[in-house]
Image (cartoon, rainbow, N blue to C red; front, top):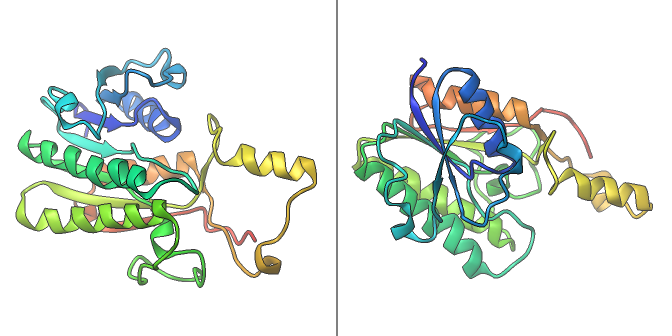
Length: 236
């Protein structure tokens, strides 16, 4: 299982850096797709080859996929609010760009990092991956849904294996976007229960997520499937 050349989009970010570190320790050759403006502090000291490009700019991706065996698509725009066109450009068009180029470069497997938010935020207890996707007001959820649906449709006409991973809110070392917001609110005394605590959240510790992504890269049974990855904790 060692020696594969694996491209990680968003390789300099929170999830991407943890994944790259794990795969390097397993003996794989890792290339990270990063933008020229990316902060690379999280991957300092890692034996990772950098490819500079932007998934929204197809022409900037020339050469990034040369010789790649497996692609893990982590890059995306994740935020609660913002213009729909910006989310669409990154999460839909960007995914289409990198997937089509991966196919052209004969990449064997494409692992797409999606989200549990495809299913909305209510009635989320005791469900599996076949649960209907919900219509929400959030452009992040809607564009991630469109991207995953497009990928699995694309897979029907190509010979590249595709798997989707749907994590809950990811937390852990190097996270500065999710858990810090909660901690700041708690420390300021401004926290409150959503609808009186009727709903659960589904966090995912980053190393648990990496466990799932690594399995998705290599397990034959993962091909064509989507998987929830959460810690399974009943937290309101």
